[in-house]
Image 1 (tube, rainbow, N blue to C red):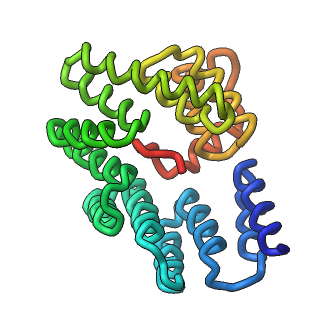
Image 2 (cartoon, rainbow, N blue to C red):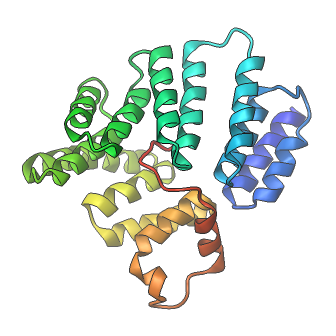
Length: 256
């Protein structure tokens, strides 16, 4: 119980943006030194604060110490590695990890979405579009629908872009109704791309107020747009600017 309490306290510190306290709580939680819950929290912390190699080493350690791990768990670890590699610009390594995740747990939409994302980043818009279409036919993922809308818009197909953006919006609106605080971040990304920028800014501010850490600060900076760069309406707070700068890189991903 003490270990779980320390880890939960670490999570709260992390999402408040108090990274030093979070890491101290994670490392001082006690219990089994190879406990995956602890290792993966520390890995997440290190990965988000620019220590990619150390983060991946802890993910590897978590895999090596797991007893009878199931395929979903191993695939999740591969996605974690791939996400870190993508954030630091190692696309080939990221693609290999995403392929590994899909092979370990066939049919998992999230692994397939990461693979489709790599196709889009490589400029292979046709295969990427086909991959995302396959995903949404089997899983009503609004993230994948938003990706489809973006791909169609880039190709000049306004009708299909609008269709998929509208499909995604209906799902985001329902999630906002049911789970508002858990949905703000995703809704911000959708609204910035296809909706009302003023509403996106409102949600971004709410999300940052609830969890003032790097990811929400970056989303808030994107929602503020030129205002934060030129200082319209006052200078951005150091808290927002500093947290945004600590973010390794914005990626097309699912928040997990």
